[in-house]
Amino acid sequence: MAPFKNGWRLIKGVEYLPTVISPELQTFLTGRKLLLDEIPYPEKLIQQHQENGCITANQGIIQSGNQLKCERCGNTTTHLFAEYPCARCQKKCTYCRSCIMMGRVSTCTSLLQWTGPAPLNQFIHSPLEWEGSLSPGQQTASEKVKTAILSKSQLLIWAVCGAGKTEILFEGINEALSKNLRVCIATPRTDVVLELAPRFQKVFPSIDVAALYGGSEDRHKYAPLTITTTHQLFRFFEAFDVVIVDEVDAFPYSYDRTLQWAVEKAAKPNAAKIYLTATPNEEWQSDCKTGKRSYVTIPARFHRHQLPVPEFAWCGNWKKSFEKGKIPPMIENWIQSRLQEGKQALIFLPNIKLMEKTAKYFQRLHPKIETVHAEDRDRKAKVERMRNKETPILLTTTIIERGVTFPNIDVAVVGAEDGIFTEAALVQISGRVGRSAQHPTGTITFFHYGRTKAMNKAYKHIIEMNKEAKERGLIDG
Image 1: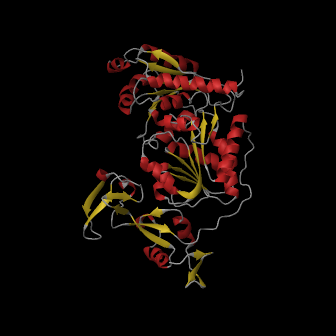
Image 2: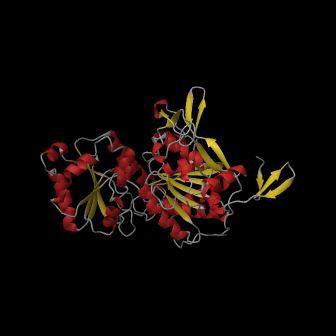
């Protein structure tokens, strides 16, 4: 089919004819690759746009030699494909098990893509409405972000927890939106999407901001600024001019190559890519030090106070104590002290099973102590109760190690030597403390039955960031 120009179709290299386009279908499908049953428009309308060349059907699973590849999630792992008797083609079809939760992609299904003219964006000279100011460290990073966006290059922002990474993005995003570029902020976790979306809508009130996650009401929305979980990017294809990946080290994004592929697929070929993290992995740290990766560090928080340094507290065989129905005395004393002071606290435990088993022991100390974890249907409400100071202490897994802010809390890790608590996790957990300018201090305690390399590395990481911040004059005192 011949290319389009301004909504007209070239016929025989000479003549332009108007193409009837459904604006709603156009905006919905632009930048996406979807199954037919994911498109909430009549099949007849979709077929008309296919005949006009506005929509192209792409094979869902392709084969190169003996290797299969899912064109939605990028899966090429043999055991994650399976056969089934297909009612549509009356043959045995192969489907992808890796992304089956998003609808079945098989050898006889197509992924539909908009190939007609792009929707017209409303030009807004400068949509940013923010009266805040940046610290010197933030300002340096903000300028680097703008440069990366304008030069369509890559940048890593290596910033401590609480450095104000969100505010660093404002000017760069404003620059992009002013030039009618489409921007995506992707993060591994729904909680972070729910926290970021209203913040960006507040400072960019004149544009649409879409928040995408499982069950989101914005899933049909075409917006200049999209804030999404990395999982939702499986449905996009060459959609964004600027892609910003927040918490690039977080699970599951850091371990799942299909999620990393989804981010690459969702970006246009010449898109600017900005990565944010407080804890880059060893490979990325090495690339920064050897000059292979463009980066900027922010070793201090915006309020110019140093990062709280973890305290190590040996608490004996905590597993045996819990098995006997008791909280280890040192941990119980820590909790009682916070309850008496009226100081809210987070207590991180290694897994859901342990947390659910021990919750009743903690609730003996205070009936309003609550638990939260990834599979908790009331997670959002519980986090909100904590934010409203209705909950004195919240027991949690690593699900809220990042992206959620409570202004004035102490934090404890029970069983800090457990393998789930990596260096990155412990640094992020420590970063929950002292984030507010009104309450810039607090305690972070690692209760343990023996120190690990991860605990020592997390401690060293925080000490080194405080040292760099002091040397650069970014913290007071």
